[in-house]
Length: 355
Image 1: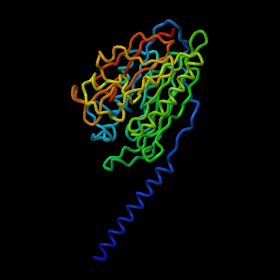
Image 2 (image 1 turned 60 degrees about the horizontal axis):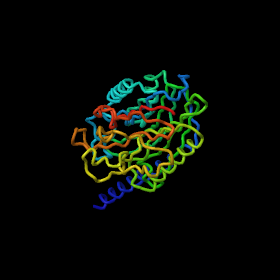
Image 3 (image 1 turned 120 degrees about the vertical axis):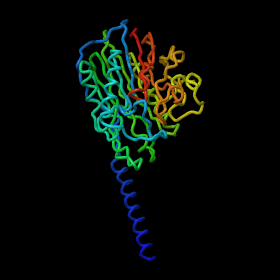
Image 4 (image 1 turned 120 degrees about the horizontal axis):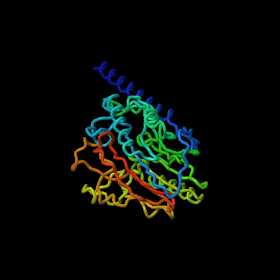
């Protein structure tokens, strides 16, 4: 009996040392990229945008090409932590690329694009997209570089390096990554780092179109973090507009863009961390959300991942979209219905003109 208790004690001590060592690893390996970081631009187009000319912009959270319609994610109560396979990732990337090429946008903004990740079988998705759209200028901004997350224990999600990619059929003058406020407690390992990229495209007459690509926090329960992220975003929008630029913001806000998505999509009125109403009334002067006709069309931009997608049953909402300054004319906006075949998001497309 004494030997048995010694064994149990040794086992508990060993597990405690392993757990302590892992926690130390998380903290020691944790880092954030610096704020106000100049990004490397790849210019493959020389076009300068013109005023009073229709253009098309597209925003698409590709979910690191791991979320086909029959996938469910463990952090939403589902089964899986990684893509089904490397082949599945490649197939989803092919489907995503096909959907974008069908629209032939002048500007394309992508979120959750992995450069290296256990969850996406180490497929360099930025490189993949660059090959598919090799006539576009582009810039990549890293959102996060997470340590190895040993959760869930049966198949850990592992490490992931992921970010935002902006493509344009025009020259890109420059681009900068700005860090966003995030949780500072242990939750920072779950919701990861966050940033925006601010990219300047030249416009005839000497002005710029400022394109802000974003993916705000999804799983944080801290309302102060959500407000702080929006505050920094709004400040940057106002600064760019005051400089005389055209300003377009696009991406995944992880907020209810319509404000009343539960009524539109006939879902539960209980708000999730990523479906709080977007505070349109707090936008800087001269900005508006492009949402005309979206409620009538009733095409969601995101689905819940607790189960595979079942049309009419799965929780859906609209959390992706465009904010534009008052010198940009909104001609049309719509969500492209893809049935969530290759991502847990549907892309949104904006037709616009620079006044």
